[in-house]
Image (cartoon, rainbow, N blue to C red; front, side, top):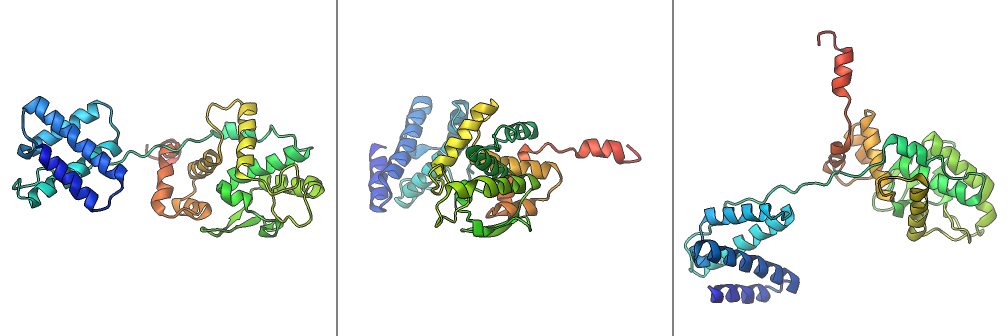
Length: 291
């Protein structure tokens, strides 16, 4: 038994897998070996499918994650396939065992009331407040990423048309809400140019007139998180999530959300559905003539 696992470890090392990967696989195999010995007093070469299944159930009862269980299944499948090639066993007992579906975490979002409360806090009569208001309104009403936000240049904006050209790996044109247009216009016309150096074309700048950084955006959001006394964290991703969920809640289709957010796949847009409070049943009861 010991030799078979050591031989497998040597085999994995010859394949030039990373030390962490080899270590994880061997740990999973040794853990199963110990379980098999303690509960069935069996050599690992005598393993049957039912014993693997009971071991996996045991892992679930211990609260192990889906990813950990999937890794264990993969480790055992590959190990038993090695034993089969070495003619130490006739069949791989783990062949037909499938990994559990990965549980997707429901995206965290702000409620619409929380968003409305948040947007009222900034003092738009000051440089910092007007800039922060424009940042908050734009992050929420466009669903753009923080990297996209800090790279927006004045030349990318068409206030009259109400659009911004987002450059990068997911280049696209996103519309501006009226709130975002008003906030950006106030910031540009009354405050930005008095702080900004002439050669800087970036839309958002810090108090020294230099392009604002990712860290700068995070500090701004943490400041308003405390001011708004929010129960959830305030981050660029939370505002992005809120944009998607609120759009879907008010009837937008997934294709539109995917296009506006620059998502790589339709499935990525579907991930937001779990957070949507659909009102279809309520509408049905109010409008259908034969309920």
